[in-house]
Image (cartoon, rainbow, N blue to C red; front, side, top):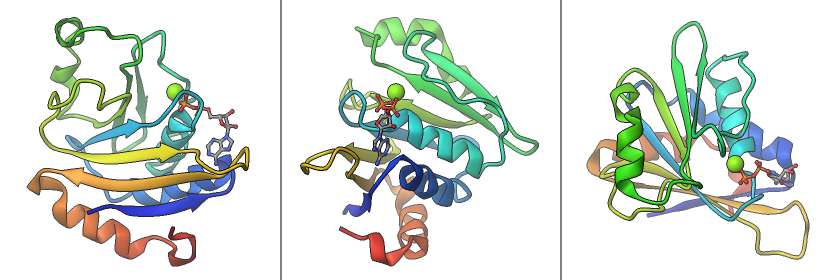
Length: 161
Ligand SMILES: Nc1ncnc2c1ncn2[C@@H]1O[C@H](COP(=O)(O)OP(=O)(O)O)[C@@H](O)[C@H]1O
Ligand SMILES: [Mg+2]
């Protein structure tokens, strides 16, 4: 099952991310997929605003991971773009921080099956417009089933694909 929204510009992408952020809690894993420059990092920026973090969100393409904090919750923002092997990623030891944070992973579906259960955000750009994006939500694993339903019931209906 997937649910899809249209974003017309980077602010709409941030607003959509901000709107879903409040449904998540520590230990949740959100994987982001989509081509380079499609808006994954902008989505995380909106998400961090949604959990009331004032920390600056930057692309962790080179740092691999950034942490952001709000008063109530932590966000772990990972980018697997430069990771070539699962073992290389395991060696960094980020899994130790999953339970204490909401985890967002750019290029998170790079190694199929690596994450067993996750909420999935797929972003694509397939129209002629420079700024139109399709943002699609789905999930893998029973853990995210009710969360998914709650989220799709609370999203702005007019933006549906
Ligand atoms: N609808 C949109 N949503 C998000 N970003 C958009 C949108 N339209 C244009 N952009 C632009 O696309 C780029 C997305 O960059 P970024 O979020 O870093 O992508 P990624 O992390 O997927 O590589 C930014 O320059 C942003 O301004
Ligand atoms: Mg990025």
